[in-house]
Length: 595
Image (cartoon, rainbow, N blue to C red; front, side):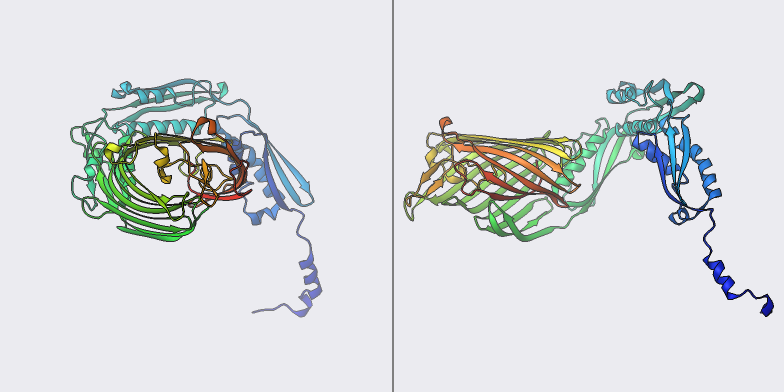
């Protein structure tokens, strides 16, 4: 390799000086690009994303030449105008300004959107048999953008796609968009919309074909909510999917209409199923301020046989409550989706100073009627409980009674609702003619209401009422009386701490419950972040025998809210203001949905 003669070689000092020279003055650092003048956040973001200045690689921002900056500044107005056209603004005024601090520059892009292009003529029609389909014609009438509204491309495309989707959901699989034209006249700032669909005939629902399941033929077919030949509606398929999901038999459910296989206008429905795990085991440690520390465990056989029967056993051992429950469930899919359930349970519970032990056998039929979940049952209870008036003495009770339980809910989100309402009611009555020791009728109702304010605040209301009609209430066992107090009742008081009281043989006060119940709660919640928040609340209530005995027990407090991956967690500290509060301050921990 040839080398320069020594006389022509640059001295080392000269090389060092050249390396230490500063970067040419044309190299600038682009620190920030600010878009201003647009109040609409979506429009501002769209302009920001469209600017080549904004999309520069971070490394290039640190060393951009004057010529490159000038080129990008010349491009900016056109890019901003293009970004605003989808919102109906075709003639915005865009100005750029460069603020310099040494070699650091900030670019200001000021946008004056001007007057938008507005819809002048709105000719959207649907022809064919669907002209008699009221829901679809309403959607045509609500098509946006409307006359005199800005011609927003996104709203227009969304409305068009929603119409296509609605036609398919209503069974118009041959529908076609025959005219789709928008004429924009910039000089007049006007847009003329011409859209026309032809619907074709509406298809009807055929038979559902169930594949991949583990049951006898004919079992799941009872869940089909439509009769073959009914007009097609996507809602029917969604109802079937919901019914199958609630069975807890399957790990995957795929329901597909097959209009290409329709015969005589009837669309067959394919239901592809994947069985879930057959046996599910659970075990864990639990804590509740109402029950204390405990352990729980159980097993569920999701299906016992090809007829879809289920078996479940659960046991819990805690400081103040022990229980063992066994249930056997038989599908009852005809008429109302539900189950025949036969269950037996043994429970021991400490209610204040009274220890109660009971055996219960229940036969029930559950079902759904609209938004109502219903359970009709026949119950047998044999209970032994302490006689607080005498040492080592017990009382016994036998009750046989039918019951009816009903629950209605409406919510926008199961775990974290912002708009929700719920009502739960229970009616039960025993008679000596059925084998009960006493005649009685008991009614209980609980209502909940949730309303969101803004994005972070909610108001939660709860009320509960109950009453007992019986001439022999003193013979009703503790498990059947009304009490108040605890995590889900009146906070600031212990579990079932509120109610009519007596003095035992040791002169200790104990609560034996009441004929009637009334409780209420007002809570306001504010979320500081997406997962953490706080709440303040006031609870009040009483369990009493006569109207004159009603003595409102009030609890006030505050708590922490955590929206955990498994559901809401609430930790509350409350103070009971009434005379029945045994502790000045109580901690309450609850886990689960608000409704």
